[in-house]
Picture (cartoon, rainbow over the protein chains, first blue to last red):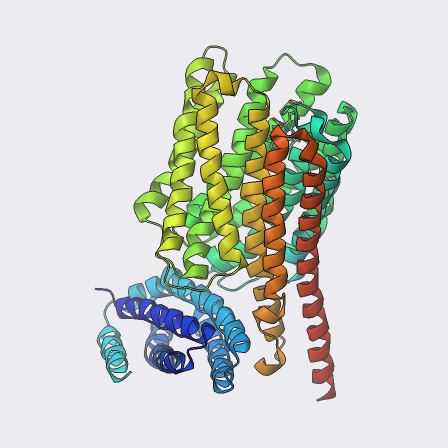
Amino acid sequence: MSITSPLLTHHKHCDDLFAGAEESCANGDWTAGGQAFASLAGELESHFSSEEELLFPAFEAATGMRSGPTEIMRSEHRQMRGLLAEMQGALACRDSDAFGGSAGTLLILMQQHNMKEENILYPMCDNALAASDVGVSLAERLKAACQSA
Amino acid sequence: MHSSLSFDQAPPISVPYRFFLAAPLFGVMAGILLAWSGGESLASRWTPESLALTHLLALGFMLQAMCGALLQFIPVAVGGNVWRPALVANTLQPLLLLATLLLVAGLLFNRPGLSSAAVPLFLLGVGGFVVIVSLSLWQTPATGMTLWTLRAAIGGLALTVLLGALLVEALAQGLAVPVVELTNVHLAWGLGGWALMLLAGVSYYVVPMFQLTRPYLLRFTRWFGPLLLLLLLAWSAQVLPDAAPWSRLAALPLLLLVSAYAGMTLWLQHTRRRKIHDATSIYFRVTMLCMLVFSISGATIVLSPEIGADPRGAVWLGVLAFAGIFVSAISGMMYKIVPFLSWLHLQRLGAPLSAVPNMNRMIAADAMTGQLRLHVLAVVLLLSAVWQPALARLAGLMFAASCAWLGWNLLVAVRRYLAFRDQIRAAASHR
Ligand code: HEM
């Protein structure tokens, strides 16, 4: 198992949560949609923070690349947090158009982001951090997040 | 390490948009040409109108849209650095537009001089594009089947244009070359080696992303591109003096491969996790269904000499390929890319997120599905017009109308982008 493979699995898990939240809210099932959205938002947040607090600093320390890919990933996290906040707002007013619009935007941003990580950044991290124990902490942290959700 | 990794060097938004806005205009022209010339223009693939319609769509609609999409897609999806994309777009696009109009006029009015004049422009325009895109595709450190398939597609484009140029010169100067066979080879590389190869490479990336499907099976993506190339090579042997009989047999496995791609895509969509449908996902289904019908019709034509003898068979295939497959796929893609890019670029201006309209507010969903319905109606009418020439004028008008609506929808998104950009800038300067 590579260092980043828990993150990869977690991407798929978040995709499922996203699909559930989007479907329920589009059908006007706000109770189920609200629950699914809450776990989506929580899981994404713990995913972002695990990367920002564990993986990226370790990668930056190991490679000396501080302003490259990790910076772009951080700024995309910020954009996704913004969209999640918009979705939260739309959910509160039960506005399915607004929710759907922000969700559709989040989907593309998130998928494009995930592909960049999975195809480029994660392999770079796996190379650079092969000797470190970041992987264990990452796996534990994500597992804890999934259980509490 | 990874110094050429671009990661996020998306080009200025004007680069894809100028190509995307040009494409539908050629669809409108094609529709009007058909409406004006009437049913006899579809009597065979060799009428001047057929040839002109073919290239209005192949070079006006498809090549424009695909160049714009590639310049956007390469940096974002495979981390390739495109050299000065704005300069490339500003110089190559006018060349390609002029070349297309000249070639189409030459074919339509039987004026070989005009077609010959288009040749150097194409060699320069497409040649420049191929060189610049190849540099970025070969220098990126990324790996994967999308990248491999894009490289193959660029090779297919280069070959198609070279063969097209050869055809023009052969016809203009009466060179002793087998024109029919050469045309068959040219069109196979254009539709298969370039357009389908590109569609496949892009769909490996976007189908899972837009619809949350599983990824294409690696076993499939590893074999699809190389097999397609191999079969196209076998098909190309028909230009050799003695190879004619067996090389045409490559048509059957080619069609089987095409339907495997369509079937796999439909299956992925069917088992997708995201349940919401939108214009893009329906457009993709229309594309894949037309591809299946194309394969079945093509196989029938190859296997049954009686049916194959009717010159309208090839026109039927052409309508399926251009209007049914590629115009549909491209329209669906643009409906996703354009609103997203408008959002992304506005967002980057640094405005608070709440000031930026989300994707759904860039083009109204009803406008997209309405246009999609009109397009499907136009394709059905076009297919009927192949056998019922009386319908051709109506079909042409419908196709022109649906392309005009497509262009309008895209224009709306671009104008919203501009309006919000100005608002955001004005607000920033007041702060
Ligand atoms: C790049 C995309 C292109 C595609 C997909 C494409 C497709 C086709 C197709 C499908 C045909 C057969 C038409 C029919 O049978 O009715 C054809 C024929 C032809 N194409 Fe293209 N083409 C492309 C580019 C070009 C270019 C750039 C040129 C010229 C420089 C060109 C010149 C010709 C000529 C001269 C013919 C044959 C005309 C004849 O035999 O009378 N094509 N092309």
